[in-house]
View 1: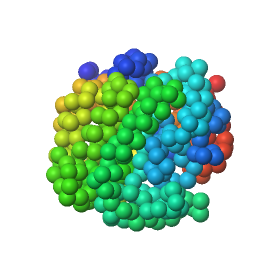
View 2 (view 1 turned 90 degrees about the vertical axis):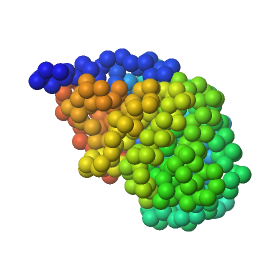
View 3 (view 1 turned 120 degrees about the vertical axis):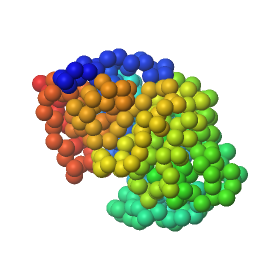
Length: 364
C-alpha cells in the first residue's frame, strides 16, 4: 500500500461467505434490545428495525434463546416455539423484501440468569456450580445472577441437540443462516474457560475437553443447516460474565483449529473486552485465525478508518458494527460518504418501544 490511506471502496467489495453472497463487508452485530413481546416473540417493531438496516452486508440478529432455560434477561426472544418461529418469519420477510440478508444468533446464557427467568424458578445451569459475579435484567430491574447447578454428563447430548433444533427453526423462520454464540461469558464460553469450568469429566480439564462442547454444537448445527450457513462468535479476552482463562492463546488457537475442520462460513471475533474497550492485551489474533479458511469478521469499537485498514490490510474480511447501527440505520451509506453519525441515546438501549429503536433518521 502507498502512503495514502486505503479507500473506503474496500468495504464495498462483494464477498461470498459460505453459502451467502454479500454486497459489502459491513456487518450489523447482534444487539440485545429487550423488546420481545408475549411468549418472547418478536413483532412489527423488530420487522421495522431490522428492515431499516438491510443495507448491511449481513445482519446478525439479536441473541435468541435456543430453549426456555437459555434465557438470562427479560424480554429477549426465543426460537424454540412455533409462535416464535412464525413471528421471526415476519422479520426475515421484511429484511429480504428490503434487499437484506440476515442470520440468527443462537444463545444459551448458562449461569448468567436468575431463577425468576427460569422455567419453574429452578437454578440456571452451568459447566460447574460456580456463581458468577454478574448481574442480569429481570422484571424487577437489575439483579445479581442466581447460583447455578452443574449440568450432568447425561444432559449434554440434549443440550447439543437443542442448538441443532434451534438452527432448524431459524431456517424455517427464513433466516439465511445462524451464528452460534460462544462468546461473552455465556454457556459455551463458560465451558471453554478454566475459571468457570472445573469439571473432571470429558468436558473439563484439558483444552481438548473444554473445547469439546463448542465443537459438538457447531458440528450438530452445521450438520443440520449446512456448514456454509453456520458461523460462530468467540471473545478470547472478554471478562464479561466473570469468565477468564489461564491461557487464552492456547485455548482459542485450539478452538479455531477444531472449528476449521467443519469448514464453517465464518468466525466472528470480539477483540478485547466486550463493549468497545480496546485496551491493549497480549493476544495474537493472526495466530488464532491461521488454520481457519472461512471468512473472518472482527468486532469491537471499530470506526470507519479502522474498518478500512482492517479489510485493506487483510486482517479481516468483514467488520461488525454494534452501537453505530443502533443510531444509524443507514450506516453503510454514512461510512461510504464519511458523513457524521447520529448520536446514540443510551437511555433507550434496553426495553421500551419505538423510541430509540426505529425512530433514528436516515440521511436525506
